[in-house]
Length: 493
Image (tube, rainbow, N blue to C red; front, side, top):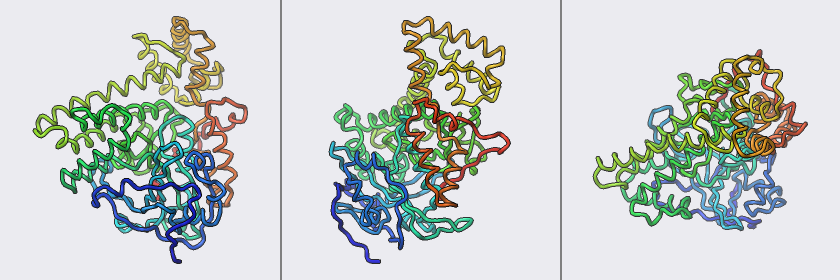
């Protein structure tokens, strides 16, 4: 099939500033066309935010863009190069199955990467077929949209098309392409690639680009040490992001350095899942046999990854390497305090607490220990506290919990805000629903095996307003039956 290079704009307003970086950072190429693409998901509200014509996107030509069979006007397609520590081991990587079409400039002047995931082989495929299966692409769509509704920074899904072509993993699976939208795809691994495969000027060009792309509105660009300021800002964003993950029980599952964005968005929803029973050691990923990326380890891994970023920036931070290391280490030491502050503020809000007291941390930790001891559901514990409906869970029957509850009520009474305000704060801080693992699997199975997308659509509708506490959400609050056994996730392939 001959690829056409331009189409009617339909709202497309593309640039590719990343393509003006030194050429070692990317390879220009087109996606590989598919024979029979069919649109199965279109995120209409996101399309409108991006300034795109929804009806055009549904048309045959619109679908062909999502399939990689046509290139929108203004696009400069490329695959990005990057590196990464994968489970602690350094590897040179790159977009092995993704093409960056360009950056959509919205009517408000914001800039978002538009990427096709599963669009065919690239120079970084390392023997892979460059394709993606339907299940993992729908999983990313569900999870990223759920995270967005929870108010957690994330890449988003604009569309999913099925290709009409199978992909072969352990079995034959339907192929699909996801159109991913992100503030950018700049990663810690991008800087590792620059430091390992380029010259100092290449690293500087990347750092300057990043400052202009993501921190132009922050008063750091003209500071004396702008590259140290860059590190500072990334540390802040990652501390805030990981605290938000912990507050809702989200487990990323594969926190490699190539999966940590500079923008502070959640990206790469492979073996991710939400925790049911509270346990800091919870791991879902089938390949994380040592628990490196367990729920309780995520803040530690966050600062480990940021240390790898700091290493790349040393030549820009100071000409004297020893001095640069000293400065970087001092800067990295701020992460724990920043993270703890964000997490404590979030936990206070989940308990309806507005102000600060010295004993708050102990109050919070005592509750978490009781939840772990009694194998309590994380989300439903806070939901029950929010609704003040303390029945049905073993936790609530214990003497220790009753003692904790009295302390908590006393703590709330010591603040100026009313009970009504406190309850509102809890309701706005504790989601009634999360994408329960068995519900996600139910939706994916219906789509993959029966071609039935209605199960997913109902799930997405419920997840779109997680703080609503509506009657329709009730059935989606029920955890998976323990008899189903441990839940396992797999990297999207």
